Image (cartoon, rainbow, N blue to C red; front, side, top):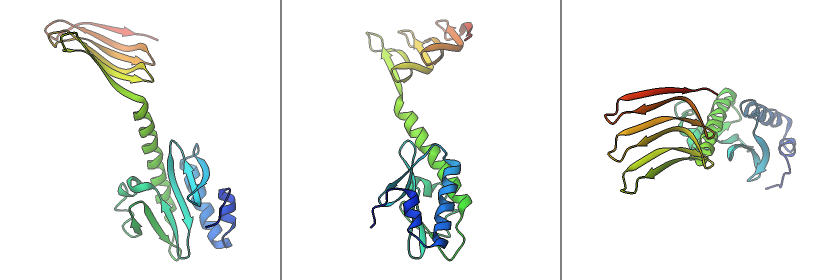
Length: 190
């Protein structure tokens, strides 16, 4: 395996007809993932955005496309005509490459990686009264209240609820009476 320093160098190492296909793969991926960084990993072109998005490479009889197993599973029906394994799809060189499908799969991978990144930073938080009953629950992002929150009385009835955005109260906040009925609504304006 050659040690390529860039995707440009990788593509230029192939005959012109293969270069055209590889460049079109690159452009297709970059179009739906404009923020992705280009690099070489495992000796092949790789796009990275919140982790590896997709890889691709040229072989004697096919273009290999590596969108992870999740990328393949989501398009199982559309990919049924192509040889595949757990995280690999082979597009035969003697048949048209489905660039539109490559774009759709890459777009999904951007969404998956973004969701994965966001779920790592967003944590559910719970706090309890001294007697062990639930006092409050909600979401924290980087140790700051963010999202929907609820507070409860010791008897378990809801006392208050509302939303935070980056630690600041926003939107409608509701206070409940001991029966759980709405007692008061307040709109917090920015």
